[in-house]
Image (cartoon, rainbow, N blue to C red; front, side, top):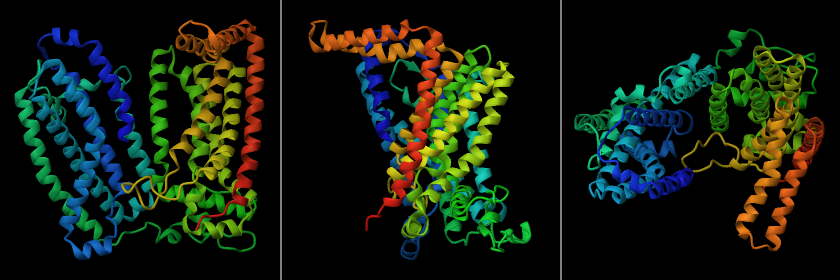
Length: 554
C-alpha cells in the first residue's frame, strides 16, 4: 500500500522543484478553509477504512484461545491498536518525509522536522482509534443480533454505498451542492493548523491547540472503549442468524426426487433453476452462498468501481447530460462486475475441500457453475440498467440496442474469462498477516488482467457506436503517433533503427486516419466482436482444462 504513494510523492518533489521560487516569493498567506476540509475528508476516509478492517478482516486476535488465557484482554487490545497505528504510519511515512523535506527546503523551517511527523502521528492515531471503536461496536452488534447477522451482507453494502456516496458528494461540489470546505468546521480538519506552524502559512493556534487536546482525549477514551468492546466481543458466543431459517421460511424445498435442498433455502430469495444439472447447480449455489454470508470477498471490487465511477461522474457532469456517459459506462462496468463477483478465486474459495472438489465433479460442470450466477443475475441487470439509461438519455432505438448488445457481449466475455484467470492465478493465503484469515482475496494481477481485458475492448466498442470519428483518432494516436513521437524523442532525430521504426509507426497512424469513418467503424467493430467470441470460447475451454489437470501442491 505504501508503494502506491511513490508516484504522488515524486510528483510533489517535481512540483516543489519547478515552482520553488514562486512559492518562496508568495509571502505570508492565510490557511484557506478548503485545506482544513480536505484534511477532514481524508481523516473520515481513514476512519472508514479502519472500521471496515476491524469488522471484516481483524475482529479477532491470532491464536485467540492461547492469547486470552495467557495475557489480559487489555494487553491484547493494546497490541492491536499499536499494530493498526503502525500500519497507518507506514503508509504515511513517505509523503510525510517528502513534505517535511520540501518545507525545510522552501522555508528553512527546522521546527517542521518535529511538527509534521507529530501531526501525522496524531492524525493517524486518532483515525485508527475512532475507526476501531466503531468497528468493534459493529462487530459486537453482528455477534449478538440475529437479524443483523443474517442480513449483514445487505446492511454492509448499504453502509459502503452511503460512505462512498458521501465521499463523491464532497469531492464533486457541483453535484452535491457543497464541497470539501464545508468540512472545515470539523475539529479533525484542524490538524493542518498544527502542520503549518513555523511556515509562512498562517493558521489558527487555537484550532491547533484544540486538535492536540482532542487527539489526547481520543487516545484516552478510545483505548478504554476499545478494551471494553473487544473484551465483550471476544468472550461472547456469536449468533449466526441462520438458526431459525427453517422456521422463518417454512418447510425445506424439495427437488423432484425428494432430496432436501438446504442450499436452495440458504440463498433464497435468489435461486438457480432446477432444470440445470445438479453438479452445476450445486457449484452455483455455493458461490452465491459464500457471497451472501461473507461479503468481505467483494472488497476487491471497490477500488476499480470507485476510481472509474468517480471519473465517469466527473465526465458526466461536464457533458450535456450525465446519462450520455452513464449508459455506455453501465454497458462496460456492470458486465465486469457480473463476471468478477463470483469466480475470481475459485480454488482459494474451496479451501481445504479443494482435493475433494477436484475428484468429485467434472471440470465442465464446475466452470459452468461458476459462470451461472453471472449469467442469471448479472446479464439481466446489465440489460435493464443499460437499456433504461440509454432510453432516458433519448438515444435512438438502434443505439439503445447497440449499447445493450455491447453489454451482453461484454458480460459473456466477463463471465467466461473470470474463471479462466481465477483458476490460472489462484491465491491460497491472505495478502499479508494484516488481512483476514477467513476470506482469501484474488490476486491483484488477476483482478487487473480481468478488469482491463473486459473494460478496454468494451469501452472502445461503445465509442465506435457513439463517436466513431473520436475512436478512429484515438486509435491512430495510441497505435501510431504516440509510439512515433516517443521513438523520435529517444533517438534525438539522429536517424538509425529507432528513427526508422518511429517513421513506420507514424505512417501506421496516418493509414488508420486515411480510412473512411464508416469503413473504420464496421471493420473495427467486426474485429472486436469476433475477438470477444474467440476470447469467450477459448477462456471457457481453458478453464475446464485447467480444472481437470490441476494438482494441488502438498
